[in-house]
Image (tube, rainbow, N blue to C red; front, side):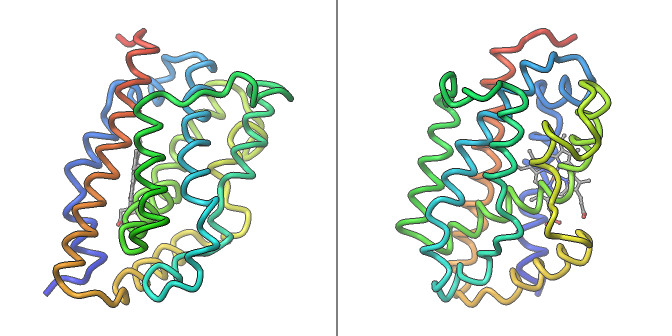
Length: 215
Ligand code: HEM
């Protein structure tokens, strides 16, 4: 039988391709969008990570989700520095969540309060992705909009507390494999992971509609 980390990875593969190749992401990685689109995207991430991290402390003692609560992953502080750079000191003033972002953040918060095992699906989808493909996005953003390498504007993608991302990801997969829930609950987590990808794709779709300049 496949390990849980393999099951969750395989099950979400198709949606990963869909997210990766969404028009907004393609335009972003293709260098076709202005820095305003990147800033708008970063703002949306703020709402998602606020939901992922603001109540996470409460989950630290949870037998299932607890081992995943690792402060070196936290992104909210880095996002706030990036937004200050991108939007200025009063970045909070114009900060708004797209309806798709609101729906995503609401679902994450629901898991935080009501379903810790489901929170793992959201945790995996974002943080393991940020540690992987996020590095490609950072590199592209630095080159397209001239941010200082690993500096303000792209700090979200820089995990200061993780010296060896490959090793960290191996450890993370071990954590997934050690999740002690029955098979049905495992399936529910996998389903939630697919939902997490779909929620991300919906945000990309909304951003694509706001910044439709792709060719
Ligand atoms: C253009 C955007 C993206 C690129 C280029 C990209 C690229 C990659 C790459 C190369 C990996 C493999 C890393 C490895 O095996 O160690 C990966 C893994 C991953 N990505 Fe993405 N990705 C993108 C977008 C996303 C998005 C939007 C999400 C979800 C929100 C996501 C979630 C993940 C996850 C969860 C993994 C870990 C899979 C696993 O090993 O279990 N990625 N990505």
